[in-house]
Amino acid sequence: MNKHLYRIIFNAARGMLMVVAEITRSGHLRAARRRSPSCGREVQVRLSPVSLALWLAAGLVSLPAQADIVADGNAPGNQQPTVLSTASGLPQVNIQTPNGQGVSRNQYSQFDVGERGAILNNSHKNTATQLAGMVAGNP
Image (cartoon, rainbow, N blue to C red; front, side, top):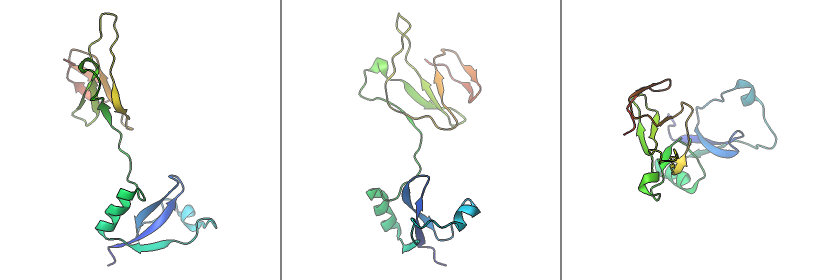
């Protein structure tokens, strides 16, 4: 009926205001019934998709962060790992071959591992892993 009616609530866990659908319920019934005097009243706002996009661009509303592993594009070629995706969707990082002293230097611009984990691959053979099953060898 009112598909463009949203509420702005304060998310104590994130410490910020968030836009939620009017029909959204609290994850915990006790928390929903409790009213804190510092929170104030709920504000209902009609947001169009353009308005929501502007709120997102201004940083007033946030989306969940996504874990990601990214090799540093400014690093020398022999210090850039290869980041692939396994058949199970986990990131597979093929690290650089170690030098004569056994040191492999790999530079990243972002190294955030998600809840499911990541595979750091230094094997030149196909290998069975506990997280991703069989993974291809690191060339």
